[in-house]
Length: 313
Ligand code: PMV
Image (cartoon, rainbow, N blue to C red; front, side, top):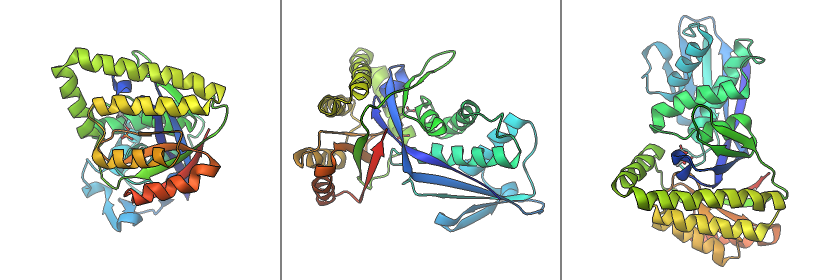
């Protein structure tokens, strides 16, 4: 049996603007994970199993858009051999889907890591290779992903990320004092591809306005990196609030997100913003152990379907 896991992620600063070459900061959420298990079966086909969804399928007849199939095909292209028989692939995940926590990339990374073991290639399938393969799969679902999700999830470290040609800037960054985040789920599913596509249309219609918004988000990400390195919680919280106001101008916030964000701030959170693509999904609030209980209660009262507490850094 070959088994591997990968974490969820949050974007601390710079979502969307990162698609347009501005810096962004993301961090793994270690206790929310996707898991993949490969077992040898000796059978002629491959059994794909998603126990959470109570579903299974045979690889030979599964839809090519199935993310498990897409990931297997990406691994096949990378290693140059067919992976079409003799094993089962089972995937489970704690990460809510379509909610800004990187569920898709985490599933891909967990599967690729399980294949690295199955194929005896743990040494050559480095984090960089795994991230690149997960990016190939992300492109199928996302359209124009920046690459930040697969990067932070494959490296499982906080990363400062800038999308660049020919190579992205990927720098692990220092978090001087761990951040305690309350992650509140609106329960509204939102497809990243749709939101990213809509922002693109708006940028095309009003390029100057959107470039200025992206510049502001990029500046906030750079200042956020310095505040995180200095452990300046007040500055980090204020920058989160400022980033949220630019995300609102970008039109990617939503009434349910703002209800949670305002409730967290009123309960004393040092800062709060949406995280990920927006228009639904999750928000994050910076809390302290003393504030945590009040913020969680305020988020639940404001309509959160669940709240995770996570230490980041
Ligand atoms: O919604 P998520 O978790 O897939 O985050 C997407 C982050 C964006 O910046 C909106 C898109 C991207 O590819 O970077």
